[in-house]
Image 1 (cartoon, rainbow, N blue to C red):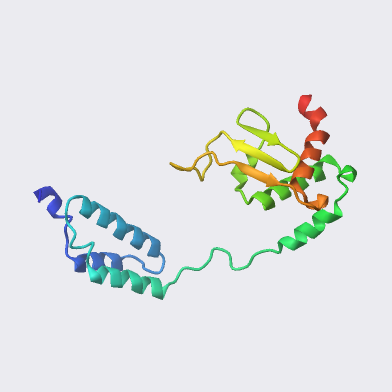
Image 2: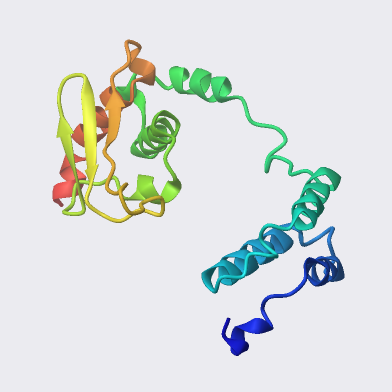
Length: 186
């Protein structure tokens, strides 16, 4: 092994001491990342003694058991309340443009489960286009999204029509486009 890499191949006790030296309660993720990074680095130069160490694996399991991960959110809101409110806004003809805009934004967010960044890209200019039929609306994304990666880019976003018009994103979107046609041309 090349002498300049020899200092990277350390005993597993030194790695454990390094990991314990950090504030374990606040840096569990950093510890895990450091172990992975060191393992990848050492594997690339042929040193596998630290990677295959049972002591390191047991140490990381101990950290996981001592401080298990918790969900980001402990409670969620009731979507049913939103749908009940949206039902009261029907018929759409009685809504002002601001309320109609808010309704279609909420329906798109709830029915597509897309990130806010993706929802802002749903428009009729040259970055995205909409194909409409009587039962579905398909947005073809021609722009890069945060969730895109090699092998999974430019996924279509499809809205399906619902039987209840007061909660149908396709019906609401078509009405919204009709209501804003004069504004869009101006």
